[in-house]
Image 1: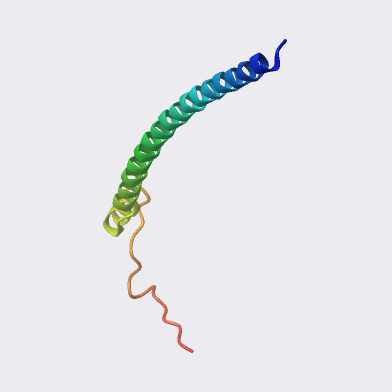
Image 2 (image 1 turned 135 degrees about the vertical axis):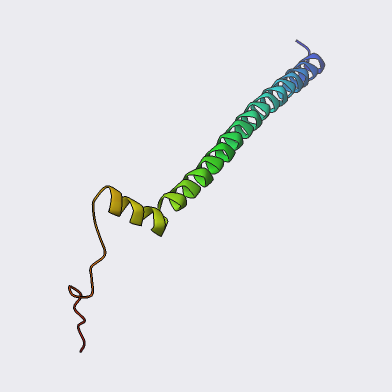
Length: 89
């Protein structure tokens, strides 16, 4: 074959291969971006849930609530002055 026909054929093949690789990279980039957005939504939902749980924990751990539970469920009471001992150094 003639040399002047081979070189354009090789260049054409390289251009086509380059175009296909650009399309493939763009497609992968879009897939990864969509996955990133989904993961960010999940992270936002988890952050909201974490905030709710922290709020619930703080409301369950208030002193008044703990005292009421100790009195009603455990039948606990505060010690009187006659049973209190003060230790000094």
